[in-house]
Amino acid sequence: MSKFFSSRFIIIIVTLAIIIGISLWVLPNAVPLIIAFITALILDPLVRLATRRLNIKRSLAVLLTFILFLCFLGASSYFIVTKVVTEVVKIGENAPVYINEISDAFSKLEANFSDASEDLPQEFVDEINNQVTVLLSDAKNVLTEYDTVKKLTGIIANIPNYLVSLVVYLIALFLFMIAIPNIKKEFYTFLTPETADKVTFMTSRLSYVISGFFKAQFLVSIIIFIVSFIGLLIIAPEVAFIMSLIIWIIDFIPIIGSIAILAPWSIFHLLTGDIALGTKLAILAAILLIIRRTVEPKVMGHHIGLSPLSTLIAMYLGLKLLGFLGFFIGPVILIAFNSAREAGIIKLNFKI
Image (cartoon, rainbow, N blue to C red):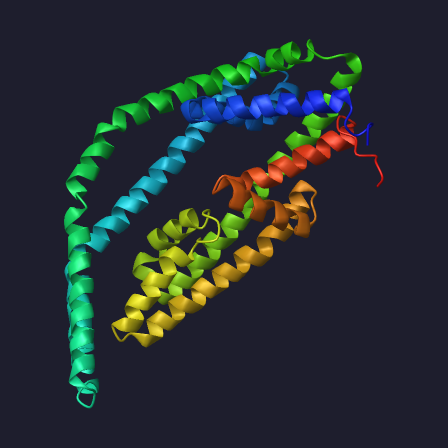
């Protein structure tokens, strides 16, 4: 046990604790810079590939890669925004129809309840009426207290901050892409040759598995989007794209996922009497949930080198301990630990 709790191990643990403590304080205030650095690391292989294949200087390769990234970002944003605006306008045009459907649904529910309550005790009927009245009153109060104009004003007022963050992100991304070799060089000056070799192995392993992690997330999200889009083309083609896009975005939220959209949608149609549409939406929600829970651990394990069981445990514990971000941080911590152990930085060669 004395070998396990060596001075080197204690130094590593203390250093990691200090780094984590500083990170928890800095992270909320440096999100654009952190995202820019991570993006630069992701794009660095493309920069090196362009340098080798085109036989050009790194600065020119960085410029070309940065321009391509901007084009991709701009094209994606334009496509998504135009589609979203178009679909929102369609939904707005059909809003009166939806309102009439809701009114008809309440009328049907009221009529059905009146028919069903004829043989019930009057006290029970009165209690149900009171509870429904309280429920509707609470809903009205919630809607009244929710100041939509104030919320929209707050979002509009923060647009300059969002633009500043975007500009800082793009500038920092370009500078990080140029400075990555120097950052690595400066970092290795603080290490002994033996430690440098171990860290090199660990970072190469980490870069491989982290890229595999994001690749796995992307593949799973693409599967979710395709299945939801095809399903909604059959079920509700008029809102297929916008709803599948919303489902794709919401599905990144662990545990909740696509259920947060499809379940209320399905319940609404079941209550309004459209049993067929409500059932189809419920089936689609179940299919998406099964795909997410079965495919994700396998795809993640394949791309990041962890077994499906280890991946599932890491994601679950990360989610419970750290919340939403822990769903992604959990596997990364496990990957970092395994990489450090493989590199010999952390040794667990003890027996009880």
